[in-house]
Length: 549
Image (cartoon, rainbow, N blue to C red; front, side):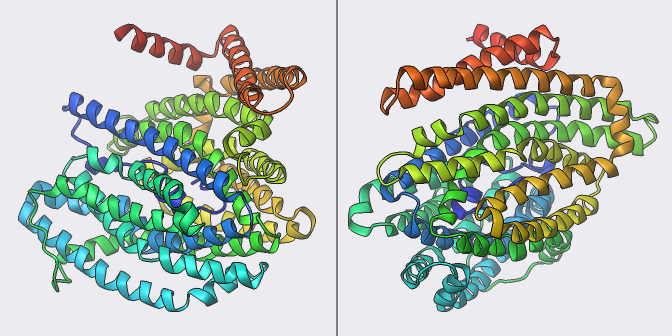
């Protein structure tokens, strides 16, 4: 559920592989196959995140965080919203389950269904892209209402370059869903890495000739390469492009997609556009600052909360199914699994949030603070990041709670909670804007995650009451104490480095590295001393891995 309050196309398509539905995962008996698939997906996730960080670093170096980057932000946000609403939002929840069923039953019908869906998508998307291309100046003016006319004109020009990427991104998403259904994971795992790498290469090679448009060209080329990358995985298919636009399976895809539209419309159709308008009203560079900060806060969220929640979901679902079948009347396995997931998420995400909060400014300076990225940009991005980090622990816990709903086949409750908290976010952001400016958006986003977590916990209260007996509450207390000590130690180390080595160069690296190592050492030592089982288990796993090598 955590997405920051707004995400660009680079963030939604460039941050690793999304959730792999149960239907796409090999059966439980194929342990080795599952392990290989998981390893490939993890490798692709890490590669895409590192390249995404490189993308943001290159962008900040060449173009800073001013009006032209705001314009580029709009040129990525609008295609993202179209992609998410039209195709991206239905892949995991609708396409993969239906494709998987046909893949097991009748491969020829699978190719007919996939061909019909691809053909229909091309026709519909081409028409929508054409309409939005014509309306690009009006859209840019509306979103960037707080910016100068030159910035609005640049945004319209860049938007016309990036809009065709909607077609390629959507086709890539469909091909990924098809490959997942066929249990072929390698190529889809690296689509996001290819996307980010292409933007980085284009920015380095073309920034002198094209300026900020080099990023837009790289984005368009990267989206097309995502499609090309996956084609070899379907070399044995019978996909046919043409005028065949219908198949009975499309009705089932639509029926599965409809329930997900409520929160998606609230997010894509309401939250994101209004957020950009509010960011534009906060002044030049507002959109740039929030995008840079969002990129950083999504790193721990994706690598910790998303990974753990996805790992826990199958076990939670199995426990819920056993209880529904009357095989586990007390359903203790559900509470035990949920408790373990919550303990592990909190044990990793809270120290990450505290550490990044303390080291926000040196981290931003190290990654972004070069070239055209000024000291003011570093200051604004660092504080935007800090305000986002206030909600990170709640967002991480809430994601696992949402998956607990999903495990019980309840998608309506979290959807309704999501709509309500999005409305609360928008109202609070608008109310705080005159006082806090740009930071009102980050504050409201953190409050949104807090509210979502509270309401999720209320509706899951019977399940969470059983969590107490598995030591979750005590673990939370230990993590809180250890994280506080870690934060104090990291801050002290930061002051020491700044006093001994003022200035840039090596000092920038040490200002992040030394406090991070000191803080990590304090956290690991204190949490182990206080008996936090999760840290002991993680350390044992690392040692086993190193020993195996």
